Length: 190
Ligand SMILES: Cc1cc2nc3c(=O)[nH]c(=O)nc-3n(C[C@H](O)[C@H](O)[C@H](O)COP(=O)(O)O)c2cc1C
Image 1 (spheres, helix red, strand yellow):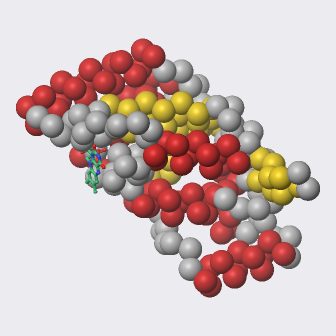
Image 2: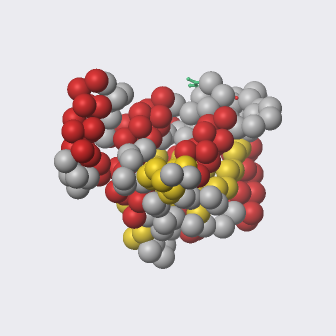
């Protein structure tokens, strides 16, 4: 079983979200064939006109196996997916959006029929992990974005877990984080 991990923790080893992710993987990752994408270590650039043209040309030639589609294929082939991203400006770091731009590819992750779009991905669960400095009032727009996008890919089971309030009192951060990790590990499934 393939587990795709999308690590969007920009602060690397300093990241609380990565700590949550690593503990989640210690508990749940053992039985899977894990591919971990650390987005800060990839050569990701926002889609520009040249890339869009190349992509459309390749797709019209039926060359969806080109390496520019590797992330779309990883999403398509995963049995489970974990996204880990800090809560930034009501959603997530822009690098994660850049990554997802590479994965929404017609004919790989989804397609169009006369009655609308259809998803081609087989993952039966996506888990979205985040930590926030304050409180997430209402919907987590980052998690909701991912829920909507992967819904189009055919992945309809999305669980979101957040640890909130970490920046409010620095003296309490460590305890809040640890308590949050324990809470999530006992409530979550993969
Ligand atoms: C650029 C940036 C934007 C942020 N935006 C928010 C925000 O909108 N709401 C919030 O509660 N915290 C916000 N924070 C605080 C982070 O969510 C918080 O510190 C989080 O724990 C960071 O996760 P990390 O340790 O994995 O980087 C922001 C932090 C940064 C650096």
